[in-house]
Picture: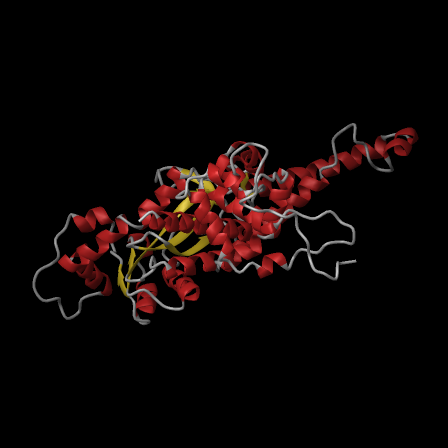
Length: 425
């Protein structure tokens, strides 16, 4: 029965003394990132998190969820995401040990904590974003939008094409018939040993793989229907490890492809704070401009004055939708290399100027170039800080919903790091 006094936790005190002469708090510099992580957690509304805990009568107290959250956020802030490595860090890393107040949750405890609290990451991202806003780091004068491809926790070699799936289904049907024919020839002793009409000595029953192939084929057919296609293309891929992931173009090498997701982020151009984060399964960005702006408005309750996006987002319908809401969009129809290398057309624009030509003129103008250059020094460095600086090049979790929550976790810890930089003056 739950305790009438509410949940109880192991006591933790950042200022507690240890067996060694110095105080644990003295091990860490005053301007260390870990102190910002602790301060951020202290200012979060964690009632939804605490409400999930209940103590059975006489049960052993759990590790305080605030302590575990501190360890998790700091781990992602420095690129340590493995629960085993996080447990090890509570022993070996001074900052993590300080955050854990010299307690050492088992890696399975940390893994369960992350897993059970994934639905809360959206709210935590929002709260940290509001802290950034209070610190004056979010002004929404210019916001740059971009996407980067991040590897899924799955191998491309675990993918099969629609044509290959159909071939293997046909082969399994043939094998099933063959097994049944052989089973009929077995004697009574083998029937009693293995069961009637079964003979595992000839070939293992293919029923499990058969069902997986059937599920994969149906999933590809459903995807085709959603796109308005009668049947999937023969080359359409299905990944058996993470079915939600897709074959996408590698952001660092346009000639290479990875099994992964398209991670979207909108960044305040001046502070590099991420004001919107979302994950999509599409390789291209063309259909994401308006939905991402709507997501941004949901986070902050207002829209940016100017939105900067590369040519991959260019879509007349999408841009018209955003500009109709009061945001000025700077999005070239051509690649930046083409845009930057060609001057703005002189003279008055023709009366019948197309939307594409009008935007080409807008971005190539002196003012347009001045505005658009902010994109390269804002959102692109952010992806570099996440992928190169922290080494977060692959998602740990699987499935679009969980990956989306992990991306929010990655982005909110990026914002924690920006709060740390701001605190240094």
